[in-house]
Length: 61
Image (cartoon, rainbow, N blue to C red; front, side):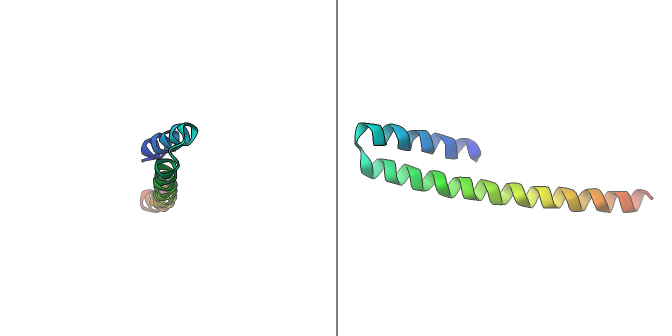
């Protein structure tokens, strides 16, 4: 997902440089949304991993 956010950010930069402001704004918006979704998913996985490691330690003791 981060890969797609970076791709849309690059499309936005190229379109903005060439003067396609509508395309640039759309691609920038998509890149922002994908990046936020990526961050949320990453945080959820980190929290789940932390909880899982603690649970595994309790079982093993």
